[in-house]
Image (cartoon, rainbow, N blue to C red; front, side, top):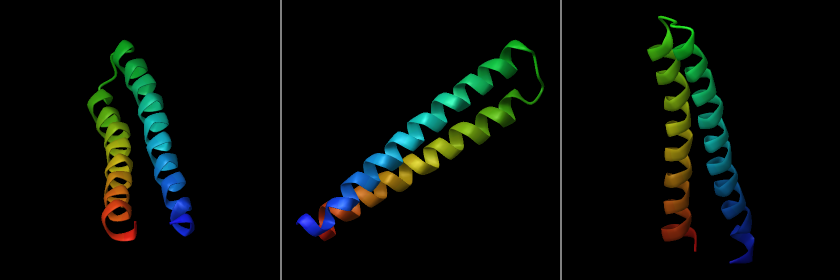
Length: 70
C-alpha cells in the first residue's frame, strides 16, 4: 500500500487546484458583474466549468484508487 501513496497526494493536489481556480473564477466573475460586462455569463461558464472538470477528474481518480489500487 505504501507504493500508491503518491496517488492520495496527487488527488488532494487536484482538489486544491480546483478550489483555487474556483476562487479565482469567482473573483473574475464578480468583477465582470460589477462592471456590467456583457461577457459575464461566458466568463462564469469558462472558469467554473474548468474547476468542475478538474474536480470531476480528481473524483474519478480517487474512485479508481479506492476500488482498484488499494
